Length: 334
Length: 287
Image (tube, rainbow over all chains, first blue to last red; front, side, top):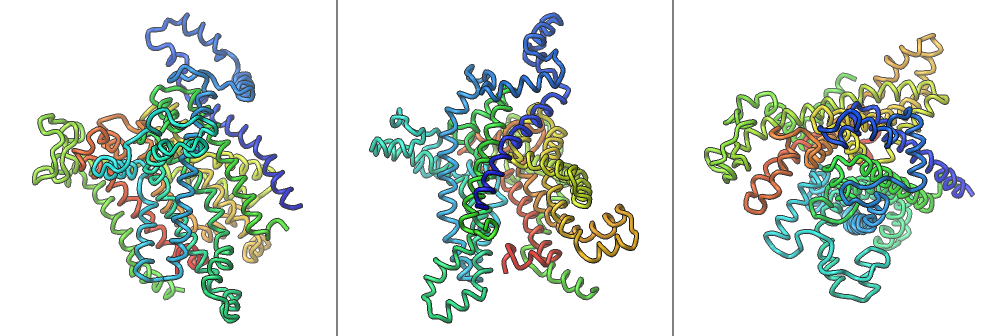
């Protein structure tokens, strides 16, 4: 029952956290002494025009009235109109969410598939040449700027070797949209050409995001396995003559992965952060590209909308991580 | 104790990774301080010579030239000043704000500290760069605004760290006895709690510097940093994009510079953790 309680209390925090986020972003954009109306109308606007627009947009009201109206707009799903696309911001973000999800989910799958086995091997062959190489690579992976790694991969694989497309998400029209995730939709259509195109387009951006994430996973898995492998229960299992493979993959890994799973929530935050930039480099039509376009257009409302959506996404992921954690490590919930 | 310190210091210097980290940071500091002397063409931060544009590295321009014909080595050296300023001021002010808040909240507890921690939770709910983008965009592109955006988004991290450490220390016997002896809360916090959590703060500061440099470079890359012709490394990489694959050195040089500096801070942080924080030494730092 403790687990249910934990989930409910985390769900109860969901709304206040997002509300707090809205207030913070609102205050930041209002306390700062730039006049959004003046920016909107340009330098040639007369004082009367500015005043009229201020009344029209509600900037003449006291701050708390503006905040209340802002909340009302957000709750009713109205985030305003994007300057970039001239469409409602919520629609734009909703349309771009699947692209970002597909990219980040592929990247995190890739980083787990790379990171956990490499971390285990690194720990089992401690101080071998392979271990040293992996440690150097994982330290480097955390020091590399994501946008620079993106350029390097583009330079090497798209420009020099020509094995992957330079940018965008798919060639042609793509499969019939069902989930919005190109890989899944092509599988549903059984359209191999689209699948191949989708996979080759996602390869470089997903790899860019996955490498630093895999570096973190290797580090934590390695440390976790080393901690567990020296514990008494593993010594006991070894003494009982259990095969080493069984000990490692069944007993050691489950205990060692506890800290790794906690890290995956944090890693997802880093992934989404990096996705904002990596999407721009690869012209990936996700929320990150939208955010950067909005920055270039000084589109206030679009950026606030983007911040709220990303905040919600991350809070949800952290909730899922906590739930997974409670299944792997029931100590805190029983 | 004294000999233990000395042994630790010896181990720190003997650790190749930490020594490399320290060396990388020394290079950064020397580059930043002596940029006007070291740079072959100090005027090239602002000057341009379009006849020389996009020259590959040669004996005159060791690291090649950029789209304006300016010497890349000179620009990188002056860029080190910007990088170091952003990292030190942004992390420094986040520490100066976050540490006292965490200390007081952790020491006193009660609803004000709960409220404070909830506020920091909200900040931490969103990745630093997303909030920093929102703030920097509102403020307009400049280095001061990048620093401000990074500090505003980074202090909760320190408040959380210090809060947790202070809470766990508060129940220690030596703190209780200091209180029983009549020491004022101020005295307990500054003389008993702070010295005991200093190592955790120092270690996180080093690693935080690396992360902040990456975030600042990303803001620069997105065009939210200093306006041109400021030789900010992230902006230089953004400028180089349209000249790939021909001018490979243009994107490579600032990227390697960022990589080396962040690597320096991370290695130093790892080394400091092994040296200062024996509790963590057996954990994620590797054995």
